[in-house]
Image (tube, rainbow, N blue to C red; front, side, top):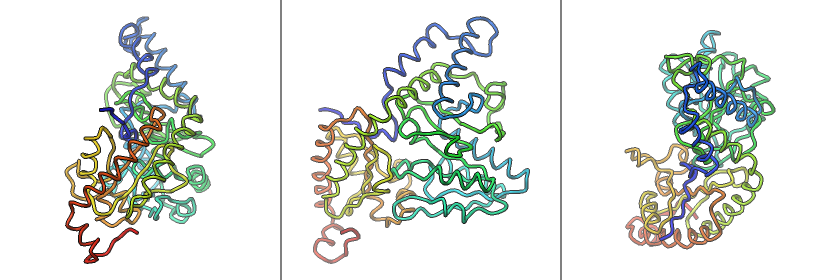
Length: 397
């Protein structure tokens, strides 16, 4: 049975480019970049080279790049740093959105316990916020706006440059979680007025456990991990040179092939959306136009997302659901609830996320399997029977 991997928003397969870039730094250039001898200094030179390459891809200075363990750590450090700056100025109002990644939302909850006021903007039916919403929410005591670049579950892309312009005009620090966007969408932190940005290598065919926090030189970082003086004293611990080199190579590769990849992936995405839309009582989640090239998110009435995933897996199709049951929670995705999906509908979600290695044959196989599994699950459901017989009403047409 062929495996069709359609869960690239969760993680991607490491590219040969990234693997090849890492190998010398595990076998030959293995020194600690803080060591003064030539083996250590060779590692230090590689570290600086990777920093420069990544900075060039983001449009910032190398000294504005801090290496982290991934997007979650970068989000934590960004929010805590901006909050500390605000607190020193007597500003403790933070603006974000209702459908951010939990790395942001849970950090905001922590800051609320420290006396910060957090305002989560509604995202509407298509899962977007506008610059006008942000402008209306900013107050004299606002110290931070954090809006994700693109949503990890439903794929909606935010108007980042416009939001950044509002924040710049108002003198408020602007952070964006770009974990789903980096390597897939163009990013220029200067042109887009971004003060802080988080990314993670494993979302664009790099290694896991390595990421970046870009912070403008005007935004001093708060140290979360104490110890040595690595990363200008802002992130202790010996740098993971192999992973950093793999990330730099993967980001270079992704950016160099971005236009052709976006065109190919978006075409496959649109075919999936078109085909899945024909399933009765289904609905597309997220903005139908401004969405990530590889993201397809649907809700199907009358089924449970976990059952759908397990049956698709039996057919060799790897996908994910918006439901949080895998974390032990019975609650549906906060993202789907934020865009107004009823609990019952939100439980029946499916996210397919494609990359450049997916094919037309993959799409055909998915479009054959999903309707079959949805029908099978509905036929098993007493609740669905009640809807078909008219005892209960359908939510979706």
